[in-house]
Length: 117
Figure 1 (cartoon, rainbow, N blue to C red):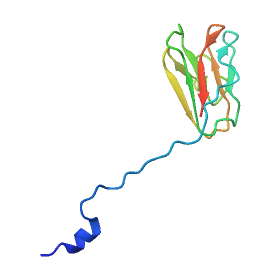
Figure 2 (figure 1 turned 90 degrees about the vertical axis):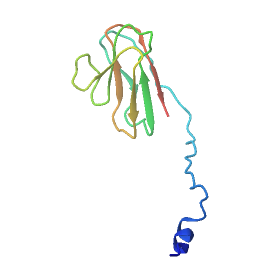
Figure 3 (figure 1 turned 120 degrees about the vertical axis):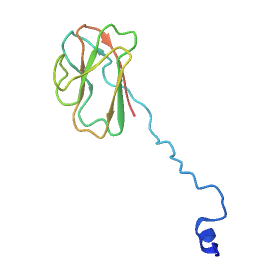
Figure 4 (figure 1 turned 135 degrees about the horizontal axis):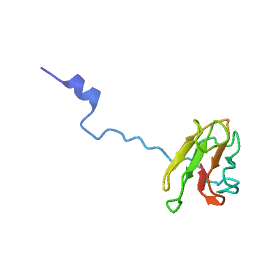
């Protein structure tokens, strides 16, 4: 039984081609704000329609309270659509999205890190 057809189909045993994904040419940029100025008052982290690829919001590990993130409505503590981030946690937004991203905390001056790519 000859397997010549199989050898010509699958080759001579060389390695399979490896798919590589070149990096996308994008530079991380920050938001207009990076802290909650007034306690229990939401701030806009990214304006509506400005996230085309990916954005991250990070509650620093040094934070003493949760930071609430919302992509549906203005962020509010205890809201059904606001996601609480404990200290050290991050929230990733995959774009494109047409809504704004907002954040709120119980204390004034709560700092956070936000980047979009």
